[in-house]
Amino acid sequence: MTPIAVALRERVRAQARNRCGYCLARQEYVPWSLEIEHIVPQSQGGSDDEANLWLACHSCNLFKSDQTHGRDPSTGRMVRLFNPRSQAWQRHFAWSENGELIVGLTACGRATVVALNLNNLVAVTVRRNWISAGWHPPED
Image (cartoon, rainbow, N blue to C red; front, top):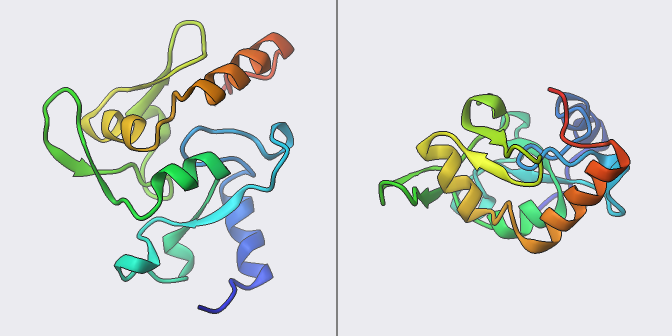
């Protein structure tokens, strides 16, 4: 496993606008560096090609692990997880009325919310504090 080149890391960071592709956490709001993640994990044949890389916070990357599919809790069907490089966040997700929760709007979105545990206690608590500071939810 060779390290991803600095220039490639910086391109992915810029494309992702320096925020997690799943929970939209901005780099300046988290105390750890956002990570380059493999949309299709290397363990499943995913490459280090730019088209397979995106930015994720530690929590989303940790929960995603080597998953590419998840179960939609509404239908029980196995579906592909959200791909932040090729899919629009707003089509698959929305913020709850109070801005604390990520709500899945599609089978893909619902499965991703569950698989990545996007509304875990720590994430919701942090979002609540970001709301108090006027930093959340993101406007785009």
